[in-house]
Amino acid sequence: MVILDEQLELKQPWAQEITKDDLPNEDLRIVADLISLEVAVKMMCELQGINISIPQKAAANAKIRYIKKHYDGTKKSRYELAKICGVSEGYIYKIARQRNGLK
Image 1: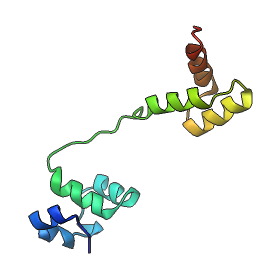
Image 2: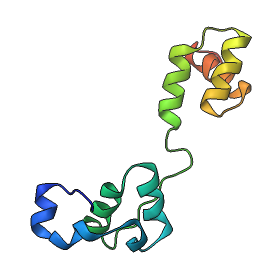
Image 3: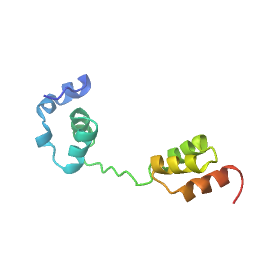
């Protein structure tokens, strides 16, 4: 049984009966697995007809800020940040050069 917030439960009390098997597509099953069944059900009830797309580079600005904050100029730092952020060492070097006003 899904535990819903009070507002959704009042509006759509049947939604508490939804199980993972009732989710209509793989996208909502992924949400249920990664976050929770409750969030997937709420999305299903509240966002009907809405397409949600998450770009591959959705976290790019946050990664750049993280790199600027943690890059100390060393090869080791560049390697570790590349691994953590899923980018190349060259990309980190490019960000560092931009931060320092170099091209």
